[in-house]
Image 1: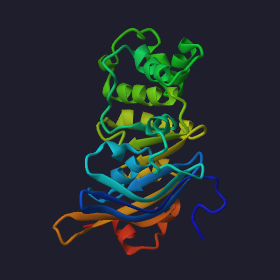
Image 2 (image 1 turned 60 degrees about the vertical axis):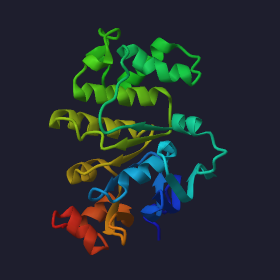
Image 3 (image 1 turned 45 degrees about the vertical axis):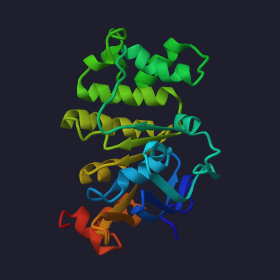
Length: 264
């Protein structure tokens, strides 16, 4: 039985493989992402976590020589089809990157810019405030909205990027190691924020932090990598299940070794 049986599945990957040129980077991934849940991708460097994450909003389209095979469906619509507008898709499946990357604009414009481009017709002041509140940042910046987003601390910048993402009103938020550049206090703030956000959004997070995955996620996918004949690495999905099962009683020995720190 699927670990997500009975859940409302929003995203699904079937036989998903990714190539960079002729090199197979990730092979044959199957997984389902339920609505309003947090799914963590864990595994060693080079196992394809971020590569698979980028498939879900077609960011790999922007990488020269990258080729995706298999199916990804969002609301049962195949999104790997080139007839699907990737820009519109990214407004529904937003992304927060490893390093905070505010626009070199005011805090207000960081939020308003994407919404404006996507045709938002409502009260922009209201949207900016709502988005900053959702990112737990409003009280810290409400008197500094004209200041540059680049003047904020690293943790505040990352929350600004999350506010910028939710302002476009997506359904899914992809997070690629969003806390790796942050101090422990800022990391905790982002983790608490994720728990609030999942009431409205579905979240997929790539993390190297085992404690973060176990604290924040509902489901966990463990990826590993094996050497290829050409001397590179090929990533693959070892196991996908509830986070409790992955950390307490995984089916695969490799998973148990990784989550317990015995890996490698």
